[in-house]
Length: 125
Image (cartoon, rainbow, N blue to C red; front, side, top):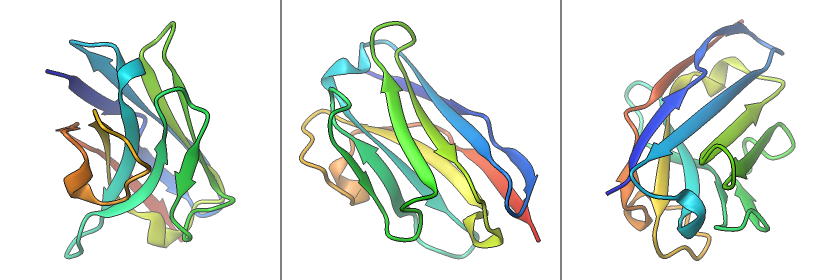
């Protein structure tokens, strides 16, 4: 089992930045592809970004490309990050991290095996 805990959410003005963290316990994350998803009220959970096991490959939704950066620290902190810059009100959502044991760059929820509880990000205009 992998336990994932997100942190770093909060309230920020449009144009601001936040860095989300996803810390893992139970197993090393180095064997898992990792993804970030988000869910706004009344909407489906959607893909935001993903990173391969080694960190060598990254994937982004078009809506965040150029503004968000996903990264990971397998060795020291067993943590995945999502740096979010130039935030917009439409980025407001609960953000979830997820782990996939078999990773092929998948962007669908069903491709991930473990999920965190989410962290709220609110961007004011």
